[in-house]
Length: 223
Length: 223
Image (tube, rainbow over all chains, first blue to last red):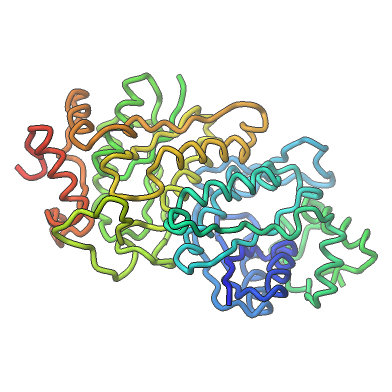
């Protein structure tokens, strides 16, 4: 059975991307990174999602990116509220090089497991303007991976699978619902209250709300 | 003053590479990763080297790669003794995707600092057969970096500088001595004794000894 390392954040995108890979018969190994994010609530969501997906193993790696800062998610910068980023704008919730770091960590584990794929839930449509969610970034990482590893030297290639890359948030939600996913397990908010409830006002909450509205479905987190 | 993020391990290569960048007028920010390496002794060497180089700041990041294993440096596999790897062989001391991970972390910090360079002490001659020490790997990482970051989107490129890439270990040592470096501060051994003394028998000790011998210089660590 072919193995895939899935980057699992606890949000709905990575849950859906992992479920697509499972549907296609891959054995899942979930990697979750505790990078000092303001919304550490997503880590417990990632654990619940990993169980629901029936992953073989979940690794939760600690990596303190607050030592670098530079993002509203990893420093004292405020999370913007009540507005979605303009087209072409890179919002302050962008975490420098986050997906490069996450893919590199997944690559290390994939090499040890002899996995054939890394699965990441990036999407280029409703992607919040992050440069490291673009298809050209993902392809460049695949090229790098082939040069970086023992497997690459031996001619085995590793695919970075992005099943959501061309989907809108509404299409992702419809896909997940068709796969029987329970989005009540997920967490998206960048700035949750002390009780873990979503703020309903940050980028991520607004994108999620727009997605459920366009899909014509209620968000089970808010019921 | 232009800034550079230097990957500083505590070994002699990264010390020399950083000194070359300093010589050229760059302001140094040192990044050291505590990845669960068997030879954690190198972390205190990295601190001493950072002070000797006069870096503006050193960040020591903890990242537990023993959760993945797959290397003699991060698992219970034995470190080979009394032999250098054959040409074309990738030794068991290879840590999967280590340089990809380290460069990704340096990229994150470089983006926050608006640094123009990342400096890494890889060399392709006496490189122990690691795939992620080859020039083509480094160039692929530069391509990725341009796509991964806010700076790249805004047209600012980040150079990955590899001042040692074409040098033998003996040439690196001669270069460092000409720059006044004190190699007594460094640590190379993969499998030091409880007192921190080098084993004199692992890959890394053998390469170091060969380098000093070919340079016609005594190793100050062994005096």
